[in-house]
Length: 418
Ligand code: UD1
Image 1 (cartoon, protein in one colour):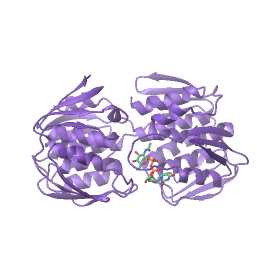
Image 2 (cartoon, protein in one colour; image 1 turned 120 degrees about the vertical axis):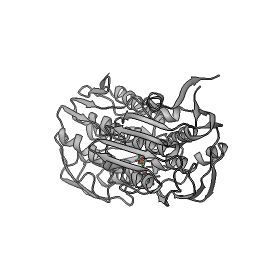
Image 3 (tube, rainbow, N blue to C red; image 1 turned 45 degrees about the vertical axis):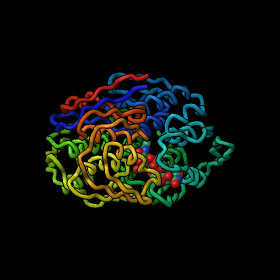
Image 4 (cartoon, rainbow, N blue to C red; image 1 turned 30 degrees about the vertical axis):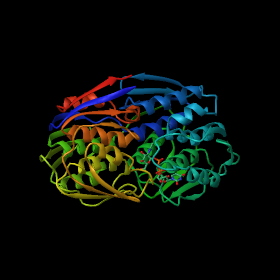
């Protein structure tokens, strides 16, 4: 089992590039199935979840090739409409293949997805939206059996702006006759990126990134070349690491607009930020101040995925910070691990109150992807040596983590234990 060993307590200094967004490349890889042709995606991060998505595409009969940061998918020979249980279990985003498989083959057989244990994570909104478009769905044990029937465009009103349900509805709607409107759609930048890909493939779609998305059904069929947008959660994580440790970092190939709320939090805590074009530079004091109350919200609100890394920074602050997690009900599991490093965190329901202190090194265990990243941030700021276990969670979402942190002057190594 691999672990990270970290010698903490030194400021971060240097410049690193931000990778392509995990949450963008996954739905776009699924969308390549729709085109029935060749897609070339640039700026694809090398992550465990991306490997899982590629395995699903290959199982479906696609030819997939990786060339450095590019992924080439030829979906012309795709001939299967099922995703086996073990592939579904590897990641939550496997459910995003439901829409493309249905649109392409008129039927689909999947089982309930796996992924991070950060809450119940049902897929009822996905299924309700697809039923509204005319998909007949049978749930049998852990399996979902779908028949497309007569797919017709409709107004689909989401009771919550779920990212995955918005994407699945968009992808299924490409095969509907008439116009589909998704009302109360998620507005995350990754939705706009998916729209961009679908447009390049020939779909008529507008409103991606806004609350109402409109698609005129017509299965997109064209070879596509597309560049994945920068990962805003990776960006936020490095900003939090610098805020926790002090120093000066520059992030290139980033999208400052997509991390506005995170930049505001670290600025209010005493960091100085300058951003322009695709670059963000952050100067952090030796110790930041307590962070103004953070309430996680759908985009453009504060991202739930950045809550854990920011909490790790708050653990080192001079003062108190308050976090309210409104998106996932079980997303404070990192708090107990941070406490092993001396963090003072009190949890009451969905609220966490953090009194800043000096952290010390400890042996800790990743609880989930972003919780694991938070432990790395805390370990970098802590005095002494830490060991972070169960880092396979972190591999799901951070490309070249040790290389990038080493370039910022950190002492971190990946070791095999046991
Ligand atoms: C996506 C992101 C994830 C991020 C999350 C919220 C990807 C690959 N993952 O996940 O990193 O943390 O958005 O920004 O893009 N819900 C239901 N029923 C459903 C669907 C969702 O109740 O059918 C609930 C969830 O349990 C959760 C909330 O809605 O409480 C948000 O989930 P959603 O926006 O769907 O997140 P994901 O698409 O799974």
